[in-house]
Each structure stands twice: as C-alpha cells, then as structure tokens.
Length: 203
Image (cartoon, rainbow, N blue to C red):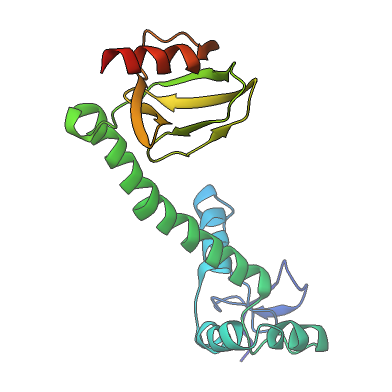
C-alpha cells in the first residue's frame, strides 16, 4: 500500500504526508511562519534545558578550561553550547542584579527622600590658611585631623568642617584659638600670632 508523500522544504527529501515531522531532518510538517513561532523558536533554542545543562554546570565551575577544550575537539553534543550557556548566565545575572541589588538601593533612596531621619546631614567644609608670621615654631592641635608644627614665616592650607576647633600649645597649655564656622570666608589667611595673643589676654 502506497501512502501519499510530500517534499520536505528543509532537506528536500520525501516523507509520508501524514507525518508530523520529517523523519530525515526533524523539521515540523506544515509549520506556518508567524511572529509567535519566531519567538517560540528563539526561546526554545536558547533557553531549553536537558541533561546537557546539568552536565555542563560542574565542569564550568570547577574546570573552566575543560569545556572549551572539548568544544574545539568537536565534542559538542554532550555539553551545552557555549553561546547558549553565556546567554543563560547573562540573563540570570541581570535578573538578580535588577531584582535584589538595584531594587534595594532604589528603595533606600526613596525612603531617604520621604523620611528626613534617613537623610545624611550635610557638613560644610571651609578652606583657609593658617599663617605663622613669627620667628618661632608654633605647635598646633586640630583634634581628629592633625597636630601640625608651623615653622617660622610659613602658612598651611587646611580644609575643615564647621564646628572644628583649632588649638595652639603655649607654655605647655593648649589654648582655643578658633572654631570653624560659616562666617569664616574661603581662602582666608588666619594670623595665628594674633589669635594666640587674643587667647592669652582673654584668660
């Protein structure tokens, strides 16, 4: 008994017309080209998983050069294709990054704008110069920052936050010379000798 046959559009070989797939190449019979079919083929080609996926995970993690070596040697059916593996790992990476890391940061920023308690207080910095116009070395103390010794007739640039105290060591004692405030202009030249005399007279 002869069965009606048709020609496969893929491999150009004849097969029975009632077959759903070509027995020679495996292409589906009567496959209409639609947008849904294109998306389906793309998804199944790059995101379908079988035993090759699980066989590829262990060598990929513990023997990084093993899979490329086999691929170059021609053993490509046992393990997952490198392009397919790369695409899958990339999709997973960006999915977890956008789902957990980026979303958490966005939530924190949103909460910071809505709740003043989460706002970081802004501390203004003042940039100015400390000048030693005397013939003696001045021993200074800036708590939490530095303890500079200014040689005679020199100056030192500093960048300090508001509320920062500045002391000078005079006769074994530290005298408060200045507390940084908004009223201190940027680039100002502070004569330490004048401040020291004022501090001594104020005692």
